[in-house]
Amino acid sequence: MDPITLGVVALMGAAATIAGATEDIETDIGSESNPNSQVQLAPQMGHLHRFINKATSGEPVAYGVWAGVAGSVAYLFLHLFNLNPVIAIAAGASVAALVHTIYTVTSHLGRIVGQSQFGQPVYWDALTQALGPIAGHGFIANFSIVAVAYLITLPIEGLAHPFPLPLLAVMWGITLGAIGSSTGDVHYGTESEFQQYPFGGGIPVANHGDINIKSSVGIKNSIDVGNFCAKFGGPLTGICFGLLVFISFWITVIFGLYGGLVAGIIIVLILIILNNRIEVFARKTYGPYKE
Amino acid sequence: MVITAILTLIIAVAIGGILIGGGVHFIPVGGAPAAMATATGVGTGTAMLAAGGGLTGLITAASMTGQPVYIVCIAGAVGGMLMIALTMLIANIIYVYGCGIVPSSAKVEKDIITGLDQEKYITPGTEGHGVPTGCFVSGVIGGLFGGVGGGLVYWAAYNALAEAITTPILGVESNVVIAGLAAILGVAVFFINAVIASYNIGGTTEGVHDPKFKRLPRGVLASGVASIVLGIFIYLIVGGAL
Picture 1 (tube, rainbow over the protein chains, first blue to last red):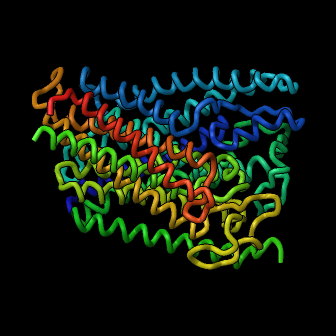
Picture 2: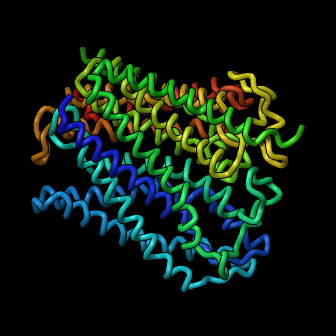
Picture 3: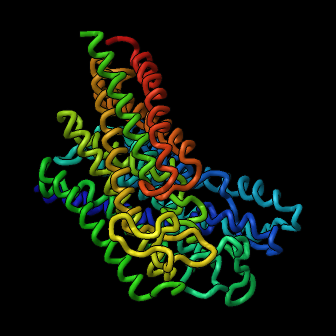
């Protein structure tokens, strides 16, 4: 076990955790996740809203693109201009943030005008006030994804991944998008959008589109969604991606080649048991919906 | 030797594609309805979740570059299983602790592994929610197949390219070019087979106990045919230099 490699793997895990949390919060603010279907449906149900809806692409592909742009620009700055890695990665993430912002404006306008037949207006202030948080969270997420990709390629024992930096950034971006879309979005779709319904149940199909458009003070907007999801869904998404990146490389650093693979399989078995315990806990604590 | 190398490439890509396409059928995805806890499974699309797991498998498999094929495949399987398992576990934590929901399936009366009753725990008006144990194990098996398939395709493409590219290209060392191209080809094979499988599934699935799982043979056949064609294309892309 090389302590330097272990330290780098820990740093990768920390960066991935930050990437996961910010990615989920950003996509919740922009309604790019699966619950965008409810934002799109709401005007038809009579709920005119101030939410951003930029779901012209799913999270995995979108984050593959943003991270790919950030990784490619960072790679250029690293190898053409020999820039400091932190500055090069920040420059890459800045360019990705610009592309991300342009995409946000065009995709939101494209999605929202489709609902004009149901009386849904375009709220310019709602759009402009959300651009900063979206670009900012996107910048942090892309910076962290490219940082993870860069650290994996460092020529040290146990790492030195053979893939080029931009490609690794794309692959981690797609993976993070898939994780964010599968985990944190549930908190947005099941809780934040339907806060007017009692806690402790799935959302019946009949209630789809009947989303909550009021906040504690005034009309609810996308920033309120970010505030809500930053308390649970976002951090858990970060933990998920952080654990994935950390465990994937930690097992071989600690246990070696063969031992690492066996350790990986054991960890998967432990995860199956953990999931079962959580399921049993939920059944005992909440009980059945009907006797 | 030449014929053997070409056949190895095409057969490995075909088997890898079949494993990927078949593996996707095991992964429980509820699509957009699952994000509102209206359907059982993970709240995202079939191809996207499978791609996330497969790409993690590809990254872990590639970290074993130079090792025997079985090590590359097992490393891919571990990466794929870890991604799918962690994602399903964290999703369930959010369902249970964030939304107060009991994981349950509407497709079976009792869980296929634990034997626990399902119907009573389903919110009226929904088709189940969360990821119960049967779905979870099914998803892990899907991650295993996807990871092995991705690793096998990467191994085959890497070896074919290693024979074709022996000198630096545009100043870039040959091993970097080989690994990069092999990864791109691996990703391509993965996405194509994941999308074919998601068309076959047609929306949502709960895994092995879902009635749609009976469509597996058709999906495997489609993936096999597509992957053989892909294998021939990869041979041509490699430059026919084998």
